[in-house]
Length: 131
Image 1 (spheres, rainbow, N blue to C red):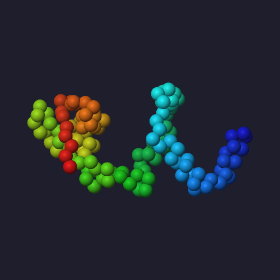
Image 2 (tube, one colour; image 1 turned 90 degrees about the horizontal axis):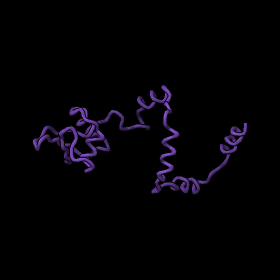
Image 3 (cartoon, rainbow, N blue to C red; image 1 turned 30 degrees about the vertical axis):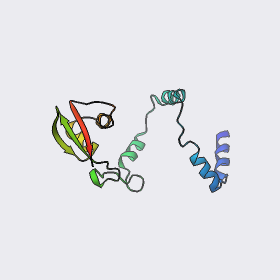
Image 4 (tube, rainbow, N blue to C red; image 1 turned 45 degrees about the vertical axis):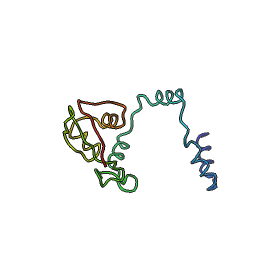
């Protein structure tokens, strides 16, 4: 009952546009402390998403996820082609991370780490991004 009363009161509160802007910008540029991140991590361990939520996230398209299904240079986030090398020899050119990961059977995370200098190579491959 108490929570319901608080919820109803919050729903009826009118917030000015100026106050909304202040609230939106409140956390920008601030990061959580290590302790706070650890606490959030512990709270989320063992948590399962409902089947309906997972289905919704897989199937959402349109305004909520305009890039869904759009790959390669047509995607608004396209950063350039990727060239893969093995032992200094060019293996292939790929249209983005996903294409490269699918064809070489390597995770996108590891390819990205090589491209961004956090790793030297992965799976015997090195990568270079070109425009």
